[in-house]
Length: 329
Image (cartoon, rainbow, N blue to C red; front, top):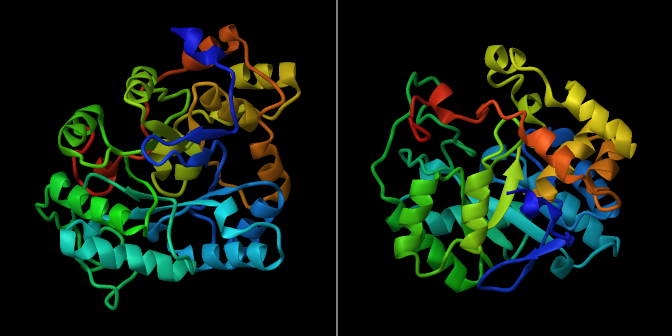
């Protein structure tokens, strides 16, 4: 079982189909405030990041694009040096909305293409046009008490995603927050197979067998929320605050002390040693540097096992808590 942890790691993963190289460490941009987002993206690129993970729903793609452009203008990188991911939001699942949504993202990012375009959630909500509200969030009207589900099949949305890939507006396509059964279904009809699945992975929710199965299907796994509850303290406040922080656990602290690393680096390395991509978010330059400095140490099999035994089957990012949609039931 833990043989999987001893694989020699590279700093990029080759995507099935395109052969594109996806950097193992990316900058996550969820919840980066707009007023510091441009500078944060620029600093990340300056400090060696070549992978930026963003989304329509994060509401900061224009600022992300400005940070990328600043780095290009200063000669730090060219566009081809970067791997940029974005995501299709739930209100744009109807096939006729997929292309306009992708073009809107590209306009905001000031890019001709994204390297990877994901379906953000396997949830289709009623359409909200760009002029009414962008990003639209979960409700048709901001003061609605319930979300408005729109019955659109994943197959219909995926066909439109394939057209995006055919057009070159996205070099690769994939999905996020899909369960195993949805992945099996998607693979049954996909003309262009998903290159990547982005899912919540941390020691409280390791999903080890799912990762192994996905990798057997040659689907690259991106792990988000590597630090556990910290990203959700202001989203699911009561629940998240009731869970011990992974960054403060004695087990994680002890392993960090052994390697002279931060607890954050240990949690990221744990995912990386399972051949996952990681996308930590920080606006602090020192932590930005630390989060990519993961390749000068290796966790032992026993340390990997210790971390995996922290499993509590806790999923923090569950839309059922705020949208009353049982996608993980």
